[in-house]
Length: 146
Image (cartoon, rainbow, N blue to C red):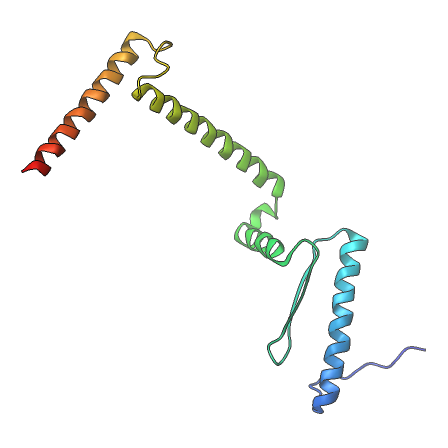
């Protein structure tokens, strides 16, 4: 035979309130753990007592789950489409990698390295860049010497 319904109202007796809080808190933490294990769900539970003490459970880490929650709230139309997010990250990484490689190549050219594969026109553009940079450096040097 089960227990009857409990009337939901604040428990006035301080000791009874604390005992009930401890038991129900432990029950909630246990249920959160069971849900995460049985259903392979990402679960986060945060509880603050009336005295401000923190109790938490997170099977994937509270911070990671909160970040995921915030991403879903910011992009509700995606419905937490992590696959789309991951794909866009890969595209972004590919773009940044290509840009990084181009900048490295340009730096090597400006240092006079790896000039063999450049065409005559590219070499002329490089020469103009270097002459412009040299003119700016000389101009700045004159300003500082005055």
